Amino acid sequence: MTEYDSPNYLIALPEIFLAGTSLILLMVGVFIGNRSTTILTWATSAIMMVALIMVLVGDESRSVTFGGLFISDIFSTYMKSLVLIGSTITLLIGISYVKREGMNRFEFPILILFATTGMLLMISANDLIALYVGLEMQSLALYIIAAFKRESIRSTESGLKYFVLGALSSGLFLYGASLVYGFSGGTGFTEIGFAVSNISDQGNLSLGLLIGLVFLAAAIAFKVSAVPFHMWTPDVYEGAPTPVTAFFAAAPKIAAMALLIRLFIGPFLDAFDQWQQIIVFISIASMGLGAFAAILQSNIKRLLAYSSIGHVGYALVGLAAGTEEGIKGVLIYLAIYMTMTIGAFACVLAMKRKGQMVETIDDLSGLSRTNPSMAFVFSIFMFSMAGIPPLAGFFGKFYVFMAAIKADLIGLAIIGVLASVVGAFYYIRIVKVMYFDKPKEAFDRPIGNELTFVLAVTGIITGLFFAYPDPVLDGAAIAARSLFY
Image (cartoon, rainbow, N blue to C red; front, top):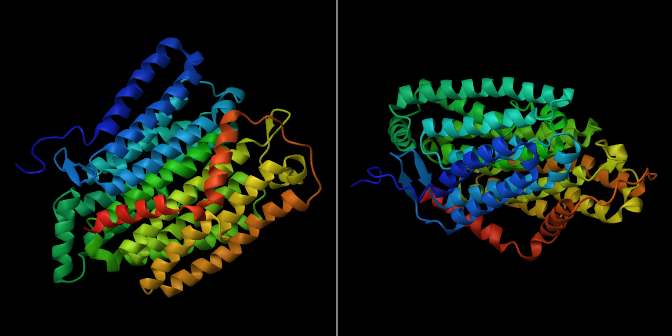
């Protein structure tokens, strides 16, 4: 008996559970209608937490099933945990927004659940076909929720842009996958890895396989909004409903980064010299654009969009190192990035005047005098994103830059530090506006129990990460090691 002979359904129990319960919730919504939205939202959150428990208590040994299509290991456990936590929190912080902004339709939480299921399938994909199925399951749900606020022209426009460019990304992926299949003789990561290893032993990769790798990298770079495939990010982040933007910035980006790591450190590891050049380029370009383009932004959501592009560039520094320590740095960075981003978007969701959402940086003027607690928490997130010690963001950058230096990518690390210095300008500018500008009319209060809880938890984790970083550091180290041994 080989490991491919008999499917082991327990390995994929979280995905099976999410898929089955999403269909049940869909039927409940169909029969009860939109008045079930709040109940379905809480039920969806509970379901994702149950799935998280399933992921954490599952077998940590490396297991492959469903004919080699699905893989479960410590790396997938780590990344799935981040995705499930991020999806749950972003769903909860949007409850009040969904009610208030005319989005109270039962399909919303179910689409989030479908997208999350697709992300988990992506993370555990061990074959290009399985990978594409998970990728499209996620993407189709994201296209819809980006345009979910149908009466808003901005939301509709963001959904259309995301759909058109996402379709282009899917086409790039399929073309690259077909080339990889044609020149390697298989779609499974194991078969591709053997082919790449044999070709690498004989010399350089064949041109067809290299072109296929480039197309795959381009398609996944779109999903993580890395330059030069970032063009959709600012418009979609600004136009989509704010809870959807928070979701985009957290869970799907982490899943796509997991996919990129799984693909490059897995079947294409022996082609490191070829794909390292690609990663170094998009890392430098993303850090540079994220640092300079955000300076001119007046809308906070657009600023956070360019900020997320820059953060992807920093995370890719660790991947460019191609070492176990580099991957550990990426995984630490992603956990910290998710926490900071969710907290920042929770602050944006709390920005309301007379029941209307406000999104410009000027609206934060004098916030320290009208709402000192929110100004303090928002400042923590801004300083952390800038990489100011001893906040969590500093540690994320520290680990990826140190990995790059140890891999002799000193130039890349220097560029990353310089981009961080430039990026600090627009983060600190927001703090200056909150603490030194003339106060404007106070934001509406109360902001809601969900937002208060998320702001408190993310603020504490970001501010006091240095006091007890072991769970993230140790988990990232074990997960990174599982990819190499």
